[in-house]
Amino acid sequence: MLEHGGRIGEAAARWGIPAADWLDLSTGIAPFPYPVPPVPPACWQRLPEDEDGLDAAAQACYGAASLLPLPGSQAAIMGLPRLRGAGTAAVLTPAYGEYAAAWRAAGHRVAAIAVDGLEAAAATADVVMLGNPNNPDGLRFPRDRLLAAAGTLARRGGWLVVDEAFADAEPEQSLAAIAGGGEAPNLVVLRSLGKFYGLAGARVGFAIAAPALLERLRELVGPWAVANPARWAARHALADAPWQAMQREHLNEAAHRLARLLENAGFGTSAGTALFRYLPTDRAMEIFEALARQGILVRRFAEPAALRFGLPGDEAGWRRLEAALRAVAG
Image (cartoon, rainbow, N blue to C red; front, side):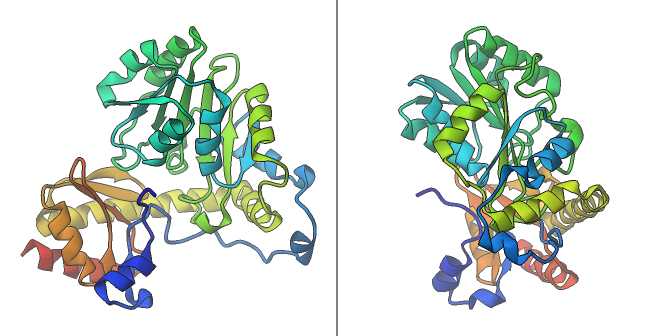
């Protein structure tokens, strides 16, 4: 089983601190979520229907011509490898661990690539998969570079799969509007409501791709994949442009504050997105343990050694983190 953030129960047992007393900064989930309107009783009583307006809201929000709602983008991460015969999948490293695991589990050979290996991978692999912005380091690929890679892959029937789970805060980075179309028929874009909207518990994501590929993925996932209450929440969140604009401003301000806090505490320059900061450091294990002993959970990476900090959700959390970092820095 791969390690993920948010395991407060495990942290509480390991360090003997009650779960309610933890400051969880181990995920990239926005700490100020979309305020979902009350769910009508019919959402609990009826099976989901495609005509409820979710597809239209998502298409308008992402500018996408064709998409498929899914029970989280994880469903696409696991399903897409099963729609191709065994081949080579090139996966950016460091990256979300589920990418390589899913392709390997479906019988594909996985090749880890660095940022400068994109073009070579597109010329030799059957599939290239990466995050843009990338998780955990926030690396961004220019649109032109990704489209060139997609074109190279297309000449050999390959796919470029781009996970845009952290792209909502900077929509100018997105390729959703051209995924699966004439300009990039082999491009697959994944989107999720978990991070930017703070609705990870709803388990709603989307695959944006050519209609024929989406139909195959739909058959694999099966009917009624996204529950009615989750569809209700997603439809409202995706249609609320004023809230999205406010959220972008809020998140960017918080991310800049976090970057300054880390720097002022003596930890140097961090990278990342509007939802997290990524700090490469040889002291990753030491800092992780020291913060955990104070009831603050961050995400630790072993290779390369680094920490990822999510955003505190209130002033008490900010003050607590600042004090803990100063104590750790000595």
